[in-house]
Image (tube, rainbow, N blue to C red; front, side, top):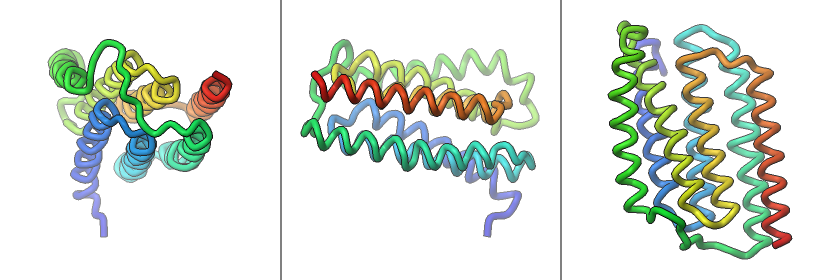
Length: 206
């Protein structure tokens, strides 16, 4: 049974796993694995949102968790798998600027830089709760790591996964630092679905 005292610890563990999943998105070359990693990353966001809803007693986070599960854990990965099976491509071995090892090194530097900058900006705001400071640092780091994936990959479908990971970072940052209204999150989801749809159609067409 999850107690109020254990919830922050579980959130921290989930945050670390989210960051690890972002690193795997940079290093993996197998398309099915990339989809599974993104799916796991999104599921971890759902878990974090549910725990935060209990910690903060904020029902809006439960709505965000439900929408995230429907769209990111189930809907978008299912659609990408259908497209991936249709184009019959299982590996993405082409990189533009950074290979996986270089991307991971740059990511580590980015995490350290974000932590250093945020320790001066947000530490005074969240000095009573290191949990929200950690969540904001990992959220921004995820956005930048997703951006690296977008620029380092050549295939359109893997670029989409990088963009989706960036949006996961935006969502994570929003859960810890700002209050994202439910309607804004809904619009973001619609935009992502349209992006995946258009990019997949272009990929199949090409």
